[in-house]
Length: 357
Ligand SMILES: Cc1ncc(COP(=O)(O)O)c(C=O)c1O
Image 1 (spheres, protein in one colour):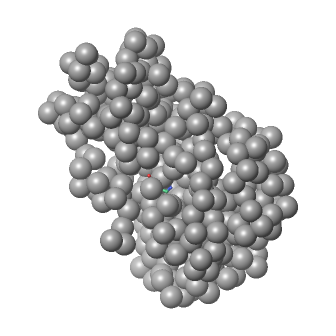
Image 2 (image 1 turned 30 degrees about the vertical axis):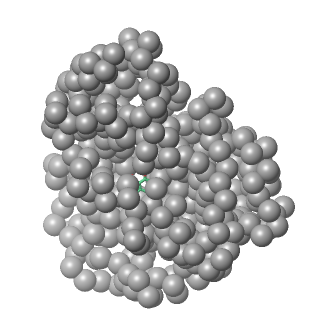
């Protein structure tokens, strides 16, 4: 099957009254984004991406507009970046655990896949030694998520340089999916693509801003690769969606408001989740990142989180079973939704956890 088992599951089985399976911030309502009639457009000059949008993305992330390739969400940005860099049979080194569609896209593209571990024991950090061990002269691309899906752990700023050096020495590029970056707020390091030509960043307005519906995504990379990605995109999207791109420009203009909304959701919820994890330390171990809207707890004394998931479904609550991240003892818990729903969902999770004792 040409698919991502996780994405198919997420589309059809993840939603619930108390949705702790969602990894992003609660979707915006129209009132969350100030818009005027002038922000709407049906058609317009969009052959190589809508220039005002490319400029807004470039300004936000500190790169020039010729390094921006718009794409439909981070999903298409990832696929397009990988398809641009890789030929069938090329070797790729990708983190484990990771976001399944990345792995599925690499399989679809016929890459020869190698893995490097991000382990619970090492706080899910990217260990340069592990990268060095996994990389070979045949590696064309290193792939990771930052912050990490599923653990929420963000790379330390010093790690970027080491990772870049290791990849450069092997003649490989590094694709960092930075879709969760902006929830680090003022602590967010520069996007990887601004650090050197071997880095490729992908991102979108989906996870940190609750604007999945706009499908506003991007690749940031060196200008030559960006041009190759645009030419390949002639086969896929060809042109962008003008209504969507025009509204995305409005979103960038109002990013400070969206950021404040995101912060107001995450901060109280993070405290709830931390307390929950402390109170359930007899049942769960967890790496708790200083800033995130997801965590990846590990069950104590159990090998599989599916039974917990099944019990929770009966309580109208969802989590993501760890098997979708090749780590069945774990589950992913997202807390970017309404605070009262997180509170109730956690209570139900507590009930389901205690019931299995
Ligand atoms: C790491 C990662 N990349 C990409 C996506 C999808 O992003 P988008 O909705 O912008 O395509 C997700 C969604 O869960 C994700 O976790």
